[in-house]
Every structure is written in C-alpha cells, then in structure tokens.
Length: 105
Image 1: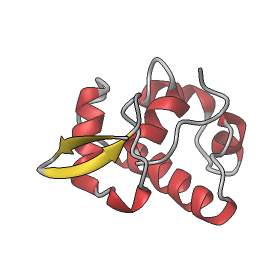
Image 2: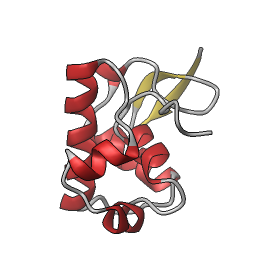
Image 3: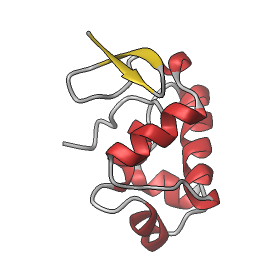
C-alpha cells in the first residue's frame, strides 16, 4: 500500500490511486481527485452518482454495475458519460473513495 496526500490529508491508496480505506474519504478529497481525473467542478449531478455509489456499496459490499447505476441510481447512461467522460464507473468510483469496479480494466 502506498500513501498519498490529497487535500491536506494522508490516505492509503493502491497502485492505481484508489483509496483502500473508504473511511478516509471526505468531500474535499473527492474534489481533488475529480481535478486529477479531469472532471473539474463537481456538480449536483456528480454528487448524486457519488452518493448512490457509496450507499449501494455500503449496503451490498460490492461495487454496482454501470447498469445498476443507470437503473437504480436514476442516472441515464448518456448523462453518466457526460458527467464522467472516458470511463464513468471507473472515475466516479475513484472520486467516491471506493474500490475500482471489477468490470473496469
């Protein structure tokens, strides 16, 4: 495990930069990771996805699929790709402080 300072806080990350301990996450860290991922300012739409991912992960213990985010999370696929271009589930999970989804390479 590596350590990385994000938003003034030292956190544990894996080799791809995903937080390994979701309890170390906070909104300031999310904002910094979003900048690193080329997202910029997080809007209400971004936070809706992040909050859904965190809630679903906490309840189920696994990362939701892209289909689950669009169906149960109520975010249309087109909107999800607009919010998180170039890998919506991969980027949103990283920003949310959660593990990389198994479906993402």
